[in-house]
Image 1: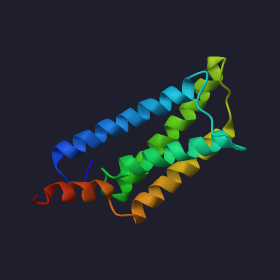
Image 2: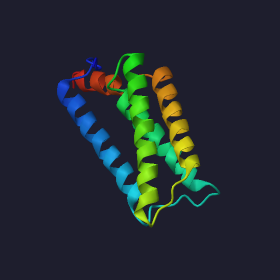
Image 3: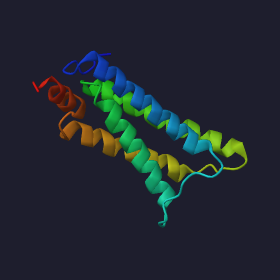
Length: 132
């Protein structure tokens, strides 16, 4: 897999660590009996969309090709679908197709944002290289 090499390896390693922490939080909040709620109508759908958008955007910073970003999108959508099924099996959470849709919309939004915005990882990498 071709990764963004315009930033130092240590920065990319930290970036991955934060990304995996985000995945862990997503799994935890997806399966905990009392997840935080956004006090809006359909706030749970908004939280799904935001979480998946953020993860897609974050991880896309490491990837440089469209093909790899599409593979990432497929993995995140698959994770969302799998977590929704597991929620249905827990007994304290519910299975909802619209949560899957919200996650997919979030992935699409995060991927679109990553393709049109400057690569944040590269910007941070350039900032770190500036002389003091």
